[in-house]
Figure 1: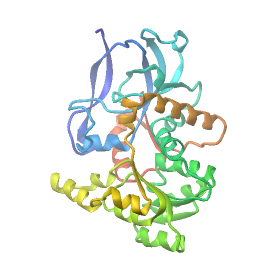
Figure 2 (figure 1 turned 30 degrees about the vertical axis):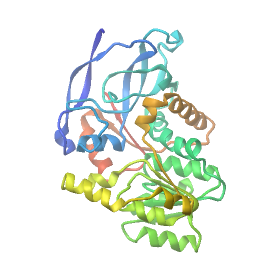
Figure 3 (figure 1 turned 180 degrees about the vertical axis):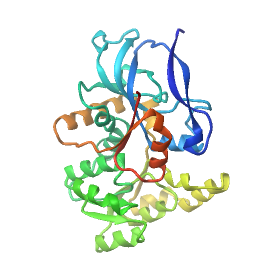
Amino acid sequence: MPKIATEGIVLIKKGAAKNAFERREISILAPKENEVLIESEAFGLNYADVMARRGIYREAPPLPCVVGYEVVGTIREIGENVAPELLGKRVVAFCRFGGYAKKVVTQDHAVVEIQDTPAEVAMVLCTQAVTAYYMAEYLTPIHKNEKVLIHAAAGGVGTVLIQLAKRKGAEVFAKIGNESKRALVEKLGADHVINYTTCDYEAEIEKHLNGMRLDISYNPVAGSTFKKDLALLGSGGRLILFGGSELTSAKWGILSQLNFVRKMGMVLPIGLMMRSKNILGVNMLKLADNRPMVLSECLQAVVGLFHKGELIPQVGGKYPVAEIAAAHEALENGETTGKLTIFWE
């Protein structure tokens, strides 16, 4: 199979961002059937990238590797059975790793034309908006007047979830970790904002519920938050786990991982049935592998909502590629809101 030379930001070691990456020449396989090659102008950051760098994302390729799930750029080459009119189109696209490179090969169904939409805006519509849309519209739709808890509400997924929930007429409980993020989630429509660093979020939510229970929790944290969220759910409630960010604060390797699991405890299916509660796990990489057209459908849908003005992308930060370590650190430390985008010079 022919190879193409390009440049990438390579993850060379686990640990602190300042030592983890190296910019170097790499080679990738030329596009084959149903694939396109994109000349990238920018790529997005996701929390899974942080977990890969920390060595706690089991799906990540072995080191050295190029991570990254999404790019904005122009299609320069196409493989067999790809529509010729895609050549030269500027697109936002999913990729299965490899996103931190100047040239990226991906499936033709994983791209959507964006014309002159700014890269940092279009990037919001990819991994994070599609994750939110899949959970809130496809997997288990939000219904009017439901009470919805959104962890990391000021982040890339959280800001989209708030908008999708308010669009359906839900009551939103937005969980943040810094008061500087309050104004953003309130602007997006959050009904109740809970700063978990200044209170016990479970007790605070119970006050607002006034005897009622939650209908949905969108939880990318897991660990110690799992039992709290499950207790807050009412009959028919759905706890949706789509990450384990609490693990990134762990310092003791396997012992910390075991403690992370211990905090979540053991749930018996019969108990869920008796209480009419639901736990749903979401791994977008597995969906991309096994049900790629679902992701394609969701991507088309969120781009459509954007064009209709029903979804306002929240741009969190723009970084040149030379500052990728700083961007990683900001994301890992919870200092950011919205989506972070890295631009090639």
